[in-house]
Length: 245
Length: 65
Image 1 (cartoon, helix red, strand yellow):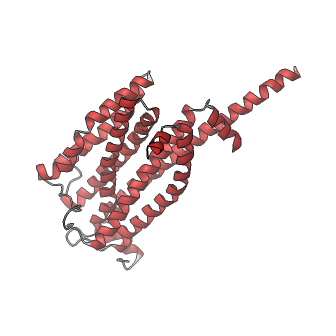
Image 2 (cartoon, chains in turn orange, blue):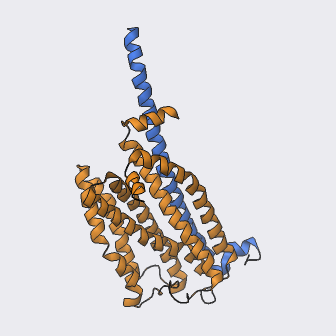
Image 3 (cartoon, chains in turn red, blue):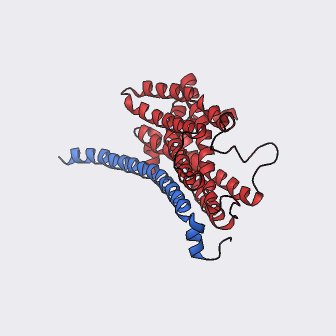
């Protein structure tokens, strides 16, 4: 286990390892997304109160769940890069930020579109929605902050601090539907006890959540690989790798 | 399969616009998000290949002169 973690910090090893992972993960992710979307759109029964508009759940909830989980990944990588000064952790943090931003934006946009036929409005300043908007700004803040600094070592440190401070927001998002009970409904899926959703709707939803986790891992890896190729363009291992292909 | 016909899938009892719009606004950014880093890596890779070619051709030029 420790040798694995140690190896992860080595760019040549990581580049080779992630290359194999990406090769498998890309078709798996696209397959899961297509099967999950088709299942949710065409096969699952309509909701008895919301009709067919509820089918947005199959992208809205997975995008939101993974956007939140992705923030932990980014903040954890930021902490590792702050404490142990591991370059790889810094690359991971920056690769996760734009992916998280896109997923948060997708959750917000699909939520707004879902809100129109269900609540009669595109937008309300509900606690859950507002805290998700803050999450979007945190992700975008990390991206923008890195670009703002000339000195990239200082930039990485500032981004790590920002992402760590922002973790305060994550439990607030989770709990917002219970603390401020307004328009947004509480969670339907529970780890303990009965879920408030029928299994014919639950299975495609779980499949889509798995698909979005794969998507997150895949895009972060792709971003990291693109970054590594550029950062190590003069390194021996990459020069040899390019010559071989 | 829940729906009877293709037009029922498209219409979704009046909710088709909202459902299809949100799926389009999800899959389009997702596709771009996957494509951009792949393109960026390919561009960097080609830059390195070109750089190696340049480095290899330099000593040959010096000999010919």
